[in-house]
Length: 302
Image (tube, rainbow, N blue to C red):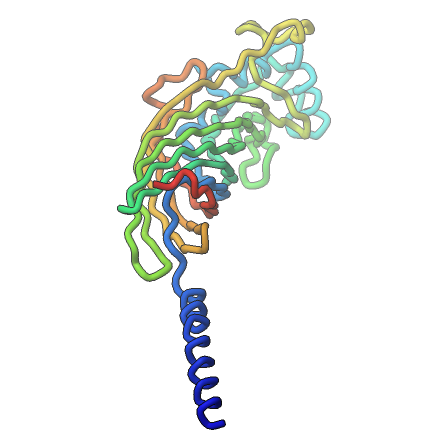
């Protein structure tokens, strides 16, 4: 009987050893991803105000405030709205032709989102490459000042009437990067990346708001003053294709067959605008992002 009990005990211990090993293996650190991964990302884009000045309506820009403000098509309506709101008086400014722009806007971009998808390939050495496709929609904003010439206007600056001006655009970015992952702990890597960017900008709106009414200054008149037949002109996108360089740093947390990245990307990129000097369109931009990488394509692994 004792021999039987001893044999059972030995068998139980021997059987438990693989289970213990399997349990330890289950709780061990996830294996770093290698091979092909699909990624999705979302983040905060901080654009550069230098590029936003395309929407300021200044003379020489493709879209100008004066083209609409001094036009027969819209000038009477703007003048009447300002008089009705007692922002100007007919004695001081007898007609729309007497409008005077006292100060143009210093434009800025509002903080916005950047979302995208991508492919990446990681090697056992820690090196890899990434191909990303991102999208963002930007809003440029600012204020210009009309002279009231009669002591009325905005509080604190009674000689001026403040008018909003804004623009909207869409951007698609294609980034190609080389990356290097440096292990920091069992599950956390530092990832450094650098590469090139190709982007496409589409200008969708440029408008001003005067006395509660919105007027588009987007040139759909072929460079001519606005007229009743504006709808007969075809709007041609005032954006275009630009390029630049990018650098990125991220902390990557390893999961089974996946990883989560939190990082920062610096862009030095050109965004194209009709009539703008290409050199003036190069600027720094910033992106803070979360990225989830899914790695479950074992047939692509080396």
